[in-house]
Length: 219
Ligand SMILES: *Cc1c(COP(=O)(O)O)cnc(C)c1O
Image (cartoon, rainbow, N blue to C red; front, side):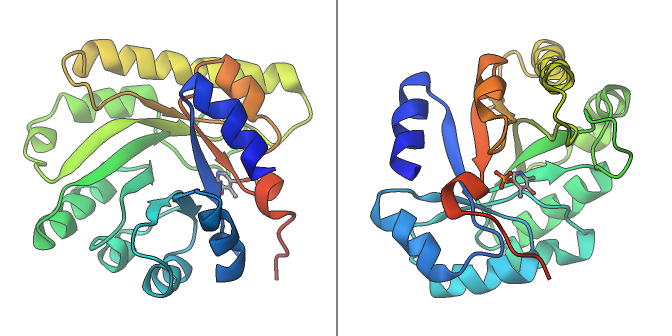
């Protein structure tokens, strides 16, 4: 399945993030040997352990909900944090990036689903912050775009509407704040069940787990 996904997404310039949460190193190495380098993880300790034990040219993305007090664990090596859902968190990422003499790439996570349980910003909050002086002082974070998770539903029309909403948010922020910034280019949306639709709606980065690794067993 990995090869199929790569063959399908590469010509469309869509980046494939292999979501390896709960999966063992052997499963990751199997993908690695087929050329996959970008992996997404949701849990801090799991990511830190995998980082220590797996090849150092793996590009790790953090995609789960991130608590400020955990940022320091991944700040030395994480390549992209997709799940920035508060500006307090962005400030903490900046601080830890600076301590490590790095710049950390980030996506702003927006709340596009109907489920209250899902995390994410709304456009007005993001706007207010991006206009602020506080934002201009963050020199060690690099905002690269937006991320969102659609509602968990079989209603395809609803999912499509939510993807369109995220694309709209991206376009709005791009034109209002990042028109001159080439790095602000990514729309991370789409998972195993809906990545094709996400690509149709403008996704530049899909996060695929179970389709590559099989179903996850949760405790
Ligand atoms: C687990 C997870 C995925 C992958 O989900 P699948 O349905 O297994 O492809 C993608 N994005 C986030 C944020 C996740 O937590």
